[in-house]
Image 1: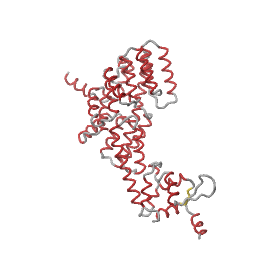
Image 2: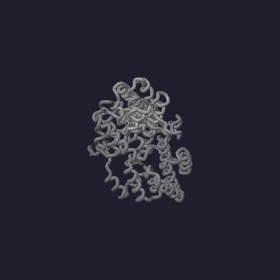
Image 3: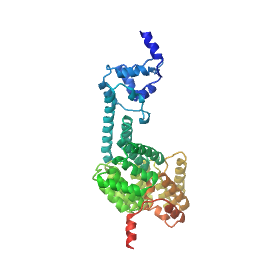
Image 4: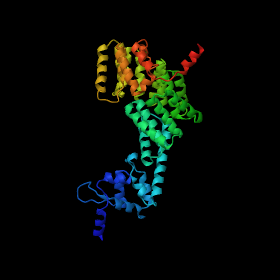
Length: 438
């Protein structure tokens, strides 16, 4: 009998590794190894070689169909970490007998929905520290339920914020975000979360400011407590140079995100862009007293200090900030700018050269940092080239170019004026209103 069984399965498809078995079952390697140890998943070890395993597809299918392996056991293991990407989910599920199938899939969908709800709560306490976790949870939800449009659109928004903040090189982050958004649009194009994701893609990928603005406004009319739409609206006003309106939207975020450091940090940036350097530094001190820190917050502190404080004091402060984030380009750029203003040209050039060398192998570089130093050195033509590169990347600091106090020194430079004219910017309603009264 045993020989007959062996002969029968020798003609069946063969899986020759834990990875292949996990892929076929749509589970992680860790899960299928647990199933083998605890529940007798039919996996053969043909030799004493460590890790060498074989499994026959027909045996696996029969084992899954067997009532001896209860639906409850499958449901228990659904909650183990998933490593199989959602786009590689095996077709084995649709071939199974109907007994375990509904329970498995329903449990997956329920678990995915719970992960999405968790992410929704985490948006209200968004910080530099928990953003990667939000992204991970959305990925896990998609691996469980690739038809969950809310998970796909949430992943899109998380990736956009990671790109804007510089945690992931913007081009890579935005490309991945667009793929997630496109997948959500195929499933539920009219869902509120999908429309929100598309509006963010309009900003960072298409620079279609008007369409994004209309979408954000419509979402806020129907859902006033939308964190993503409120923040998106603030970004549009920032890019338009209407800092007071951006500040108003960020202030509206505070009741919705009472524990979030992201809105507070952006508000500090508004203070800096508005030339309120003392307000920015005071606000930053308050935030840091609560134990919160991020590269962007320290970058704003460095830039504000370079404007407000005596250059020797400013340089010491920025040097201390570099100890917190030694790899952050903008903090180093602020140091080079402060050194140039202080007359230490040789040190400013050394900082610039170090940034340039670093950028040769770092795809996530921030050209804005080098532009700061070039402006301090009065190398305006080079500064404009770096600003153009920053805008093409879609980096965070490029959103503030119309108001940036350091960049304002280039206002009369023809190269800078040409760059700003050919670049697509959102319309400032403040300026529109001003022109209508003239």
